[in-house]
Length: 117
Image (cartoon, rainbow, N blue to C red; front, side):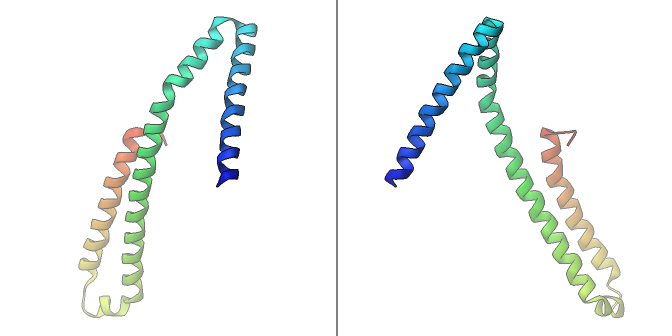
């Protein structure tokens, strides 16, 4: 634990020194526009964090829906003789369609954040 705290502390110090050196180089190369660029990047970090957590949550829910639909299809394919024998094709199709609709609803949330992905 002591080594971990020491390593994380030294990494934090090293990162802050790196940011200061980069800021100095940017101001010497392009003037105050470098500092403005760094401020804009720093301002958008919370937005990036918020969007990435939402995307992770949507991706998990999409994957759960895909897994559920896959299990359902696997069950019907495994018991195809029973499904055909008792004429349960419509029931199977309805259940798979409902699982697919749920998956599409889950994907809609992710598409609202990144519509082109």
